[in-house]
Image (cartoon, rainbow, N blue to C red; front, side):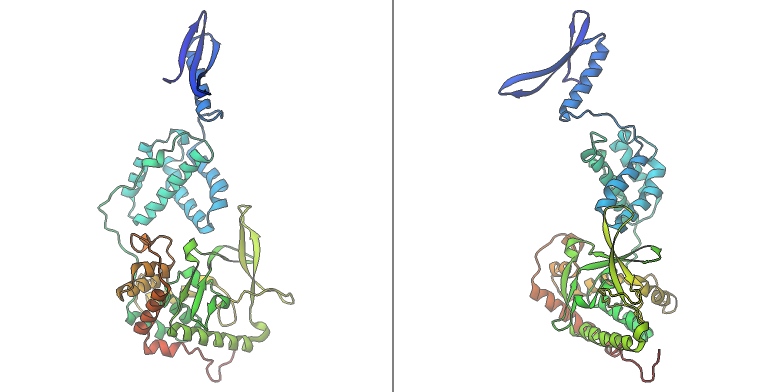
Length: 428
């Protein structure tokens, strides 16, 4: 190490290096008594490394990257990231990272080795670029914390790694619904009031799937035509209490208020009346739910689980909008069977409920709405998600965009199916 000077003092050796001046006077750290020059060099290098790390001894970690990733997941990810993000990271780590580079010491992995790894993965698999970006996030995040938070390594080798350019043509899995397809779906499920109303809510707002099924009646201001999006639902491994949890929105800007047009407003008003009537018909057999705070398996993060009420116990109910006829809440599973029918019976292949969001955005944009307002409606964190910049949206523009979309996309089929009436003679 060039900053360490070795001096022979009689029969022994001494190391010396300059440190920061104090009161304008040059200062040094030195130590003598080493039998050989090699011993002095080694000790001097260790002392200098300790000095530049503010007095903290630095020892090269012999930890494997695999073991470090387990530590990182348990101590950083599980206490700072959302459950679904942690689960996605675990999948990437176990399927791709550990098998290829997990056996190496974390301190021995260089930027060259990591660039080779990511290039090899991209060449081997025909995934979307977004999928590869998530893999890159795991690498960069794990090494960033190893360097800056835990001090396991001195230098972050992921600072220079990038995804390689590729000539692969990505097959888009996004589906843009035509109005004919939407009417076809609504006609097929016109007897399934809950699915119809949930479908139209996404269709006319562009809300994320988890946001739709997290809605409570308290979130919807039917008088003023405003939905307050505050939550997202997600599922975990089922236990005796259920598997559905309600948490914050995907991003900070995901928490937002959106205007709704007359079509969706009418649908929601009629669906609420329908739900109240089914509650009356089912009586004591109708199912109600409440929210319980639980510590997740990671130990620190408190989550809110949706739990069915027990008999003879008073709860503060959560008034979920999209439940089955008898009040049963199944989260996003509500759309599982309908979409199987949509794919197999109606022949609308490779479409998802989530694609209603992209369809909404495309239609609003094509109607002449400013890109900044589209981003605001969708709750994107950065406008580059919809375009490459972000500009503050104006409330009147957003309301105008919603009303324009509503007027152009309401059909006779939609008007008919949103009445949500109890059929004459219908029994439980």
